[in-house]
Length: 195
Image 1 (cartoon, helix red, strand yellow):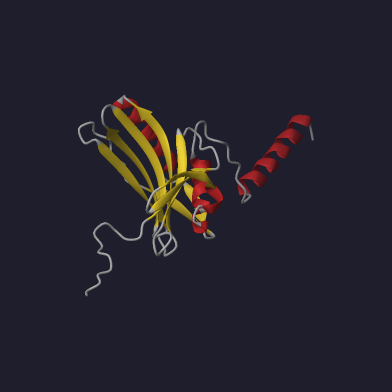
Image 2 (cartoon, helix red, strand yellow):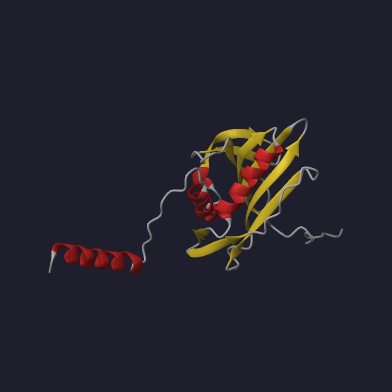
């Protein structure tokens, strides 16, 4: 065989091996947060214990902890543990604070695009994130997208991932990313005790 043919055959064989392997080459997304969100979700079964740093604030019914790793593009991140009969926790990243609605809207859309259809693993199962985009409206002052997991099962039903955009007086828009426990749906009643 001539040299160009040998090179072509070798290139074809290598391409075939890479295309048919179970491993995938994952390139980091520029300014992306996908890897950070995956890290947070993977620690959800541990109640975010591996993400908690020093105490940030103590409140009567909760404690905020610094997050012990830097989240790409976040202004601040923290874990909150609530003192309740059943342990409830949340993780939050403030992704942007700005006076400009359009800049906040752009960040909100960017976060949505990075999370929509993203694959995450926890509890030994791979899930795809799905959320229905709602375009922020300056007159509403608050917009959020709540992501669900596909396939939905018992392990995934309480874990929620949400992005929100909110106007805070006097002139700030804040864009947040949250991962948290959701004990019950908004329209679901809690336990009633009659005396």
